[in-house]
Length: 72
Image (cartoon, rainbow, N blue to C red; front, side, top):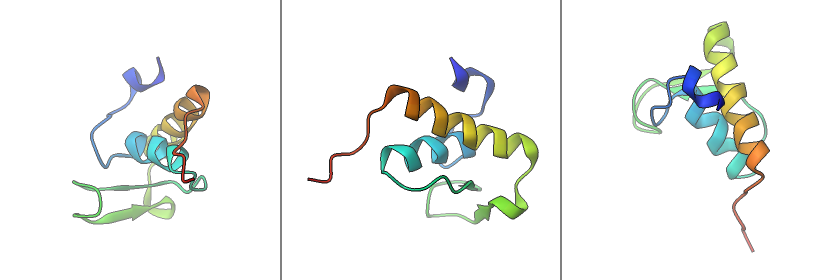
């Protein structure tokens, strides 16, 4: 399983990648320093290669499950 290699804390890059896929948002690497939307936002331009890899892994893992929010 992909997430075993990454920090899976809420707000982290892996978590945000998975959430973006689930909520039908575009692939836009980012994360939060602490809690989601309650701490500083870090965008792709300020992310390390490892953080970008974690975001991608979270997005791709969620995509492999195929489950997305039904907005209907």
